[in-house]
Image 1: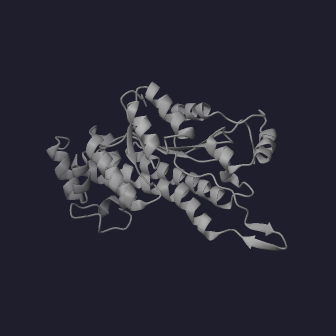
Image 2: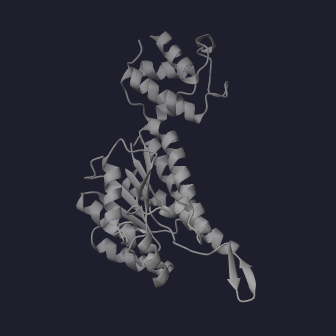
Image 3: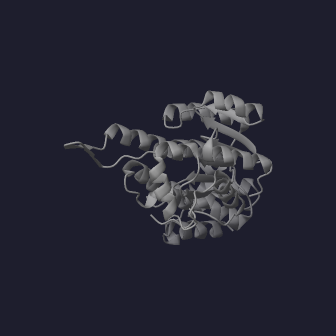
Length: 77
Length: 247
């Protein structure tokens, strides 16, 4: 399931899946801007069938934090 | 969007088109708040159960302060109708006796502040709260048939063309978060501000150019706004409601 998150992030940011690591943050790549972040959040919500709070959206600015929030919400094991 | 119980802000809702929108939205069960400069008019509206906030929406600091107060009292709005503005005509060059006079830059700035800056100020403040509360709201911008370029209305036409552009930009930016942004471009409508801005002969001539040979009624424009709000697939477009008039 974690791999699904990475693939989805790569698809939204339109970067090779190999570049997506847990350490990757919004600050690391230009394409991950505020507009892409919104798109990513909506894609995650659709994929995992949940609605994220604003606090969670603000937290999810790295791949590791995306996975952590999804685990906390029970969407990832 | 089902309008019953929805929190709606209408700027410039004391009279004219805004007032017609307020009345129709109240009849649909929405919870109305009007931002307006007309304190006496607001006081009258408040008596009928509409909430009123005095605000000059062309002043950013006032908009920030007033929307903050609104959000503290009501939370995020579901709908913002950017209706406040001024209808103003002035040619680029005026012939005055034996010489000519340029369009006054002060009136240009005044119209841009009232008709374009206000839309930006209100929307950024209201949408910020929608985003932080994950409210799937709607922004309605009031454009004009003049957006396509009405001679004698440099500032007004430019401001309304800007409103159309913002509608398209914001629909694309905010659509993924479930926020729709739409605009309505009324043709010449029978309101006090139209009669104040256009002389009777100009108005008569304009009316002749409308295929339906009449001015629009405020309630017809308000009905158009309700239709856009209720249709959840209408987004990023300008609804031209002008009796078929082409400028």
